[in-house]
Image (cartoon, rainbow, N blue to C red):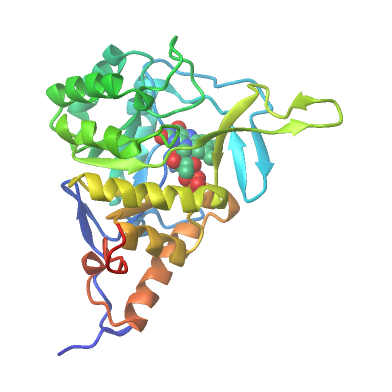
Amino acid sequence: MMRTTKENPPNLAIEFAGISLKNPVMVASGTFGYGEEYAELVDLNSLGAIVAKTITLKPRLGNEPPRIVETASGIINSIGLQNVGIEAFIGEKLPFLKKYEVPLIVSIAGETTDEYVQLAKTLREEKIPGLELNLSCPNIRYGRKLMFAQDAKATHQVVSKVRKVTDLPLIVKLSPNVTDIASIARVCEDDGADGVSLINTFTGMAIDVENRKPLLRQITGGLSGPAIKPIALAMVYEVRKAVKIPIIGMGGIMTADDALEFIIAGAKAVAIGTGNFVDPLTPIKVIDGIRDYMIKNKIKDIKSLVGSLQCPKGSS
Ligand SMILES: Cc1cc2nc3c(=O)[nH]c(=O)nc-3n(C[C@H](O)[C@H](O)[C@H](O)COP(=O)(O)O)c2cc1C
């Protein structure tokens, strides 16, 4: 039997919702732009996939600054979906990303169900590998109190309607700002989603006590980074028990061990977000570290690690 060594490397390739990935490590939406800025620093073709910054129908300038604040083991952002809009994305950003062999997952967001449907229809012609529905951005107001992913009915409406207009692999990005994330994941599965992506940021805030003013212009924003990792991990574990569709796990992944925790808890793929701001090479280091772990532990195929958590008998 061939041993797993550096010369005989383990298999990191995995299929996610019909998309073939070289390895399970993606970059998370909104933390890697449209790839251009990072291309000089990172070999984009080494990544499992790129999830591009969320696109809306019209360009958005985003919220007024200050819109990022550092907190203990994390950041709170209220960028507000600054993006070039679907037309410029297709005309100016997509050609660059299509030059690479790395699968591209395009993230979209609308203020109404119809906007999601329009965006999905527009992208049908573009031969992209996958679509992510961002139903969980805490920073744009939908003219309603809740994000789509905080409301099972709203989630159902968007996912079922978008499913009808596209055959692309459809991944839904979930919000952690809910009481039962597994029930929202179940709605996505029932409505034909091919995968779920979790988690987006937690609503958070920070205050300057000297002048008693919020540190963000929007007052609240989305917390990300290592501070949220244990909660994200527990949510991935819960969702894995509730649905059969594959999961992209994220929230505070900075190291290979962090990523392995998500994979063992049940994520078929993982994504790096805030880690890209700390060190653009984080995803590459995570991929290398997963490979080293597999060699050390004689694991031939990454698939055997997914959901391989060993729970004591009698625990749930
Ligand atoms: C500055 C910033 C911008 C983000 N923009 C988006 C976005 O456009 N769309 C989206 O789905 N998630 C967005 N996110 C959320 C991340 O994709 C990710 O879900 C979250 O940050 C948790 O992962 P992390 O702790 O590794 O950053 C953003 C996060 C940050 C920090």
